[in-house]
Length: 143
Image 1 (tube, rainbow, N blue to C red):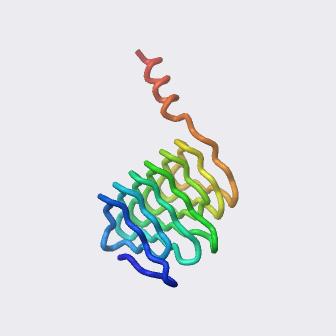
Image 2: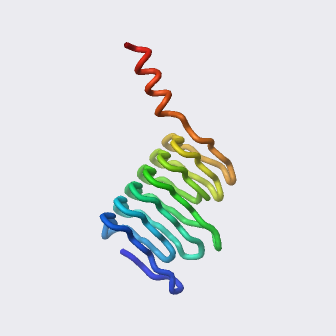
C-alpha cells in the first residue's frame, strides 16, 4: 500500500512491482524494474528514501531514513529477507544478506556483500567489494 505522509507521496518507476502487503510511506522514490516484497516497510516519513532501478527489496525488509536525511540505495542492489536498513548509502550492485542490520548513517560500497545476520555499526563504512573479480579468479584457478 502507498501512503502519503505530511503531503509527501511515494513515487514508483515503470515496471516496478510493489506487493499489496508492503507499506511505502511518504517521501520514497523507487526506480524502474524493482521488486518490493510482502511486508516490506519503506518509511520516508521524516527523511527520504531513494531506490535505484533494478533493485530487489525482499520480504519483511524495513527501510527508514533519519529525520531530514536520505537513505540512498543505488541500482541493482539486493536486500535479503528481514534486513533492517537505516544506512545513508548502499552502493550499486551490493548484496545485503537476510536479517542483516545496517545502523544509522552507515555506508555500503558498490558490489560489497554484507553477510546474513551481520550488524554494520552506526556510521561504519564498508568499502567497495571486488567479489565478482575474486569469484572469476577462483573459477579460473580450478581449470
